[in-house]
Length: 109
Image 1 (tube, rainbow, N blue to C red):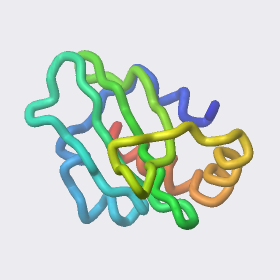
Image 2 (cartoon, rainbow, N blue to C red):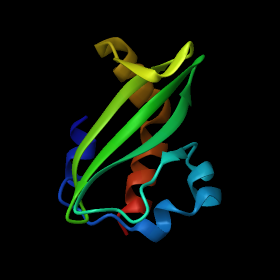
Image 3 (cartoon, helix red, strand yellow):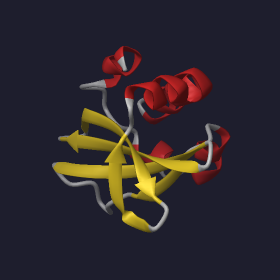
């Protein structure tokens, strides 16, 4: 997760977040984007990981990223989430880490 710390306090580029075609290039889909993004808000994205969907939650305050969280979505109840085990997080970052870094670079440029 250290590789994502550099995005904390970076300004979110909302126009890039809205570009679903470009997000798909990174293997990411926007699940929830408030319109407009308020002073304090949470955005949700998903990416596939094996047979699961991973929820990427990004908390934004005054346009800057304040928190990034990766959790698993429950296929039975898409509103329920559970934390990734350390081994799952390592696997996710090994398999998709470069694409996720490119995704964060894109949404913060």
